[in-house]
Image 1: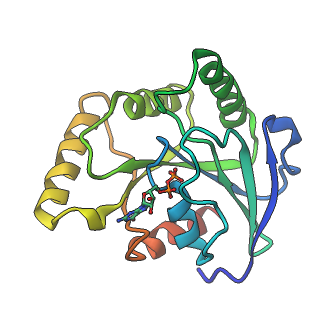
Image 2 (image 1 turned 90 degrees about the vertical axis):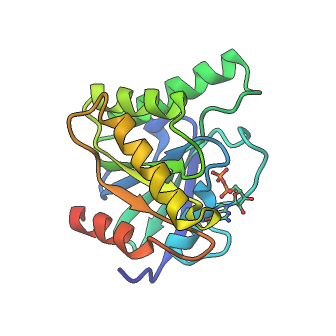
Length: 195
Ligand code: GDP
């Protein structure tokens, strides 16, 4: 898919304030610092569409970008940042869950996982919750350039085995590096098949 146009539209805390749900929409989410902004910039081939390296946990907004005038890419605030208060965490959960469960045009959510780490409870819990609520998702492994190929393979294998303890089937998996521009086409193709 050629990205001819990528335009920031709005940021909201309330899903009812988001743009009219008249175009297909894809959301990106993951733990703070997972590489979400870098991935969004890589996908759209824009240097600063999503802001990278902001203070973790600071952006608590649902950010809409209009791509090629035909679909929305949604940058959701990260989770799992230790320094966030219980109150803020609950606020995040309400906002994200309302959005994920009630947004009628949300076709798929991409859950980002830092390929360097072994499976983390926060990610597994988040995926289980999506599954229990019937929200389709794909898994995106990030920062794969930081690992040697044998180590990446071992981490991916471990992750898949962990998922299969709970899930009967694995979700589609994508291997990406924003640094190297890897995994861009398969991700955009996956979006294209929904569009
Ligand atoms: P976000 O908080 O999830 O939006 O994460 P960012 O995109 O801001 O990235 C967090 C940090 O990881 C930054 O220092 C990025 O430069 C770095 N990073 C993100 N993606 C990659 C990648 O694919 N490879 C490498 N080596 N570093 C990355």
